[in-house]
Image (cartoon, rainbow, N blue to C red):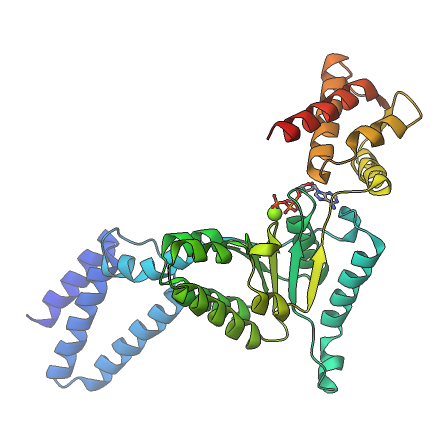
Length: 340
Ligand SMILES: Nc1ncnc2c1ncn2[C@@H]1O[C@H](COP(=O)(O)OP(=O)(O)OP(=O)(O)O)[C@@H](O)[C@H]1O
Ligand SMILES: [Mg+2]
């Protein structure tokens, strides 16, 4: 084929936006240039091709079934295990926690903010945190707060999916995710950390379980000090002791006590011009006792919505919300929990 034929191919594939065929045609032109002893021209074309491939990464749309499409599949599988990459604007003001926990978490933030100073003295930085406790009590929220306070990117990992979808490949996939997250100096948030324990049930000889625990222990050990792993579980008993020991900080986020229920209600009300019809919160706090932060917050928001819609309030300065509705919703929540 002559040089002009190769160029015609290039133009055609270029106009058709078929990147793979275009690259093939370009490679043929390069070979042709080498054969016809125009080495300089061949080298120039080659470096043009290399540069674009380097910059291209995932920016160009891929033709389904093309070579570059299949090359992307491995990364896509990895992305299935990363539920989301998030940045957060949450701060300690968005969460109700007891003083001890708050101090622990604030100290962690301080350690990371002043990491360079501590490293000068070769001091280790705490970077492996376990949040445990009942559902709806702030494990995920506390992770967002840390990401927000530290201004770090957070990778939310779906461990349940990793473990159940490809038994046997869990270790490999975990290692890939850790590698990616540590390069980006970020937080790895592993929800449902207890799903590791469930492998015991699938696997007779515990071989897979041991392998995964070992992988995690190693990944934890080699985690750069600037990265953070946060694991969350509501079944701490399912987690292997060797793994539990590796956490620098184990924080229980429990159901709210009376003081915390009050603080939560105030936190929700703070965002609007709302107040209760009766001055006393005593009966509300009593009815909310035993419920999670999530259930209480949900009931309160429903109460506010009902009050607004049922009274047709358009835009008054202060909206008086009904403690009767709130109390009945709280009792409903309790009943539902008892029935489950
Ligand atoms: N301690 C808290 N302070 C303020 N709000 C809270 C707190 N805990 C929970 N909430 C509210 O409830 C929502 C759900 O809580 P979150 O997702 O953090 O619970 P979780 O402990 O991760 O539960 P799960 O075990 O089901 O994942 C939060 O987005 C927040 O609105
Ligand atoms: Mg959660």
